[in-house]
Image 1: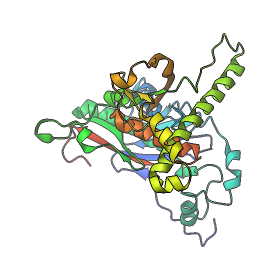
Image 2: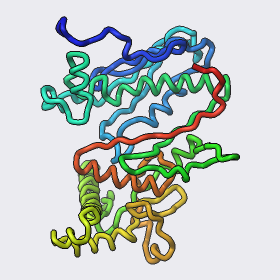
Image 3: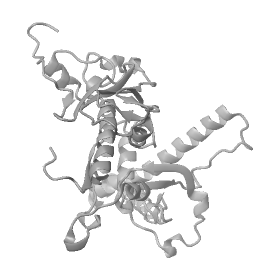
Image 4: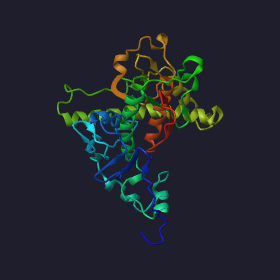
Length: 356
């Protein structure tokens, strides 16, 4: 970095005062993690207390997330002995197993649109050439791991409970009226277990366009896996084509759609989507691509067993109609090789007064 670089020597990766967390690592280096300073001694703590939260944020859980394959297994390097904290700095480390710096060769000179690459370069005078570096979502691993330690201490000391959920993806938002409220209209939300259960959908696919290849059909495991991937891609393309035609006509308007010669196709797509089972919730409720729940009349004569796949979508939006719309939106965005952001909501209870 040149002497004229705008780089400032500030602790930009350190958070907190009494409970201080410093995160480290880049997207495609050997690993990421955190140093936690200020954790009280004698707190029972092992990797098993931290791992569940890292597993919840782990990539590759479904087709809706990044395909990067990481186990995200945490190691405690220091600060504990015999399963209890010593009161000294706790070192946490998670190896990067799926390191592919070569994937970003084309982006070493040209910043990615919508990413932090250019901002990082202007602010610090340089940037990691592979992946997002410190601006990658991998950086959040250190904060999640440190947060798991803080949460355990708060729960054991004050009975504090913390629960969060996905409240929006793009322009699809969870209705305020859907969030549970208690006495006096006080927001209570969902428990973490409910968020995980209610916010997971099962993918349904039309058996006319999708068939899972079994061992009896293709004996070789590798060939069978390839055949099933091809079948999923074809079924996904068929589904998104229907959604795209319907959405395109809706956006253009009937008159414009007619001019473009897609009115008939759009009408057919709308009719097909209106009663097409696309997702199933934890109670067996069946929904269309836009979150409309199908009743017994619409499902009469439908063999749901033939539509069910083993693919689960952990959106963690505990309102199935909204979760369905989110899932469809993400699927549409990913087929365009793009990504999309969103927002979250949450409730913390039994939080001690004057906690900084």
